[in-house]
Length: 198
Image 1 (cartoon, rainbow, N blue to C red):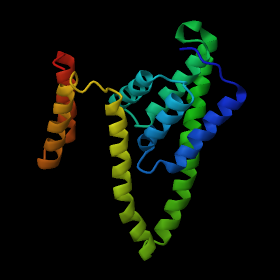
Image 2: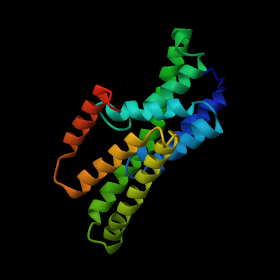
Image 3: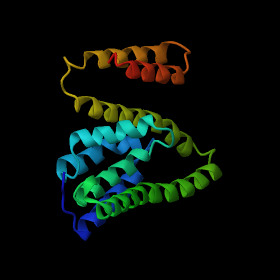
């Protein structure tokens, strides 16, 4: 996929990620639905498959969960450079995409978090601070559910993917009804994937 980005497009890209940074309650992954709207639906800078693959790859790799943002920036830059085979100029644009996306998603929220946490700690006994903390939990859960839904509907052949839905339901029940650690389920999922059962 080859796209053309002007300097204004790059600035818009950075500003969009910076604004999402301030909305990322519960982590960057909760902003994935709007990233999808912006990058795939509105701008056509990424395909649906590339978007979903970037999230899946980043979530399966060790490290912070914000890595998917770097992969999206990389993909946008590579696409702007004419594809991965276009050589060093495409790789340079890929690195620029990584830099702009990561600065955009990390800088505003980091500054806000530092300032807000310092203030909240100094005022932790206020009723409004305690109410705010209690009210954030359902918002984070809702944002995570919307991200999961977005990623699942991208694979809209439900009859073909019934095994994946079954594994998802079983894993959800095991996590909510037992004391089995989540890492065991991740290991089991990796084993199932490696054997090619799904």
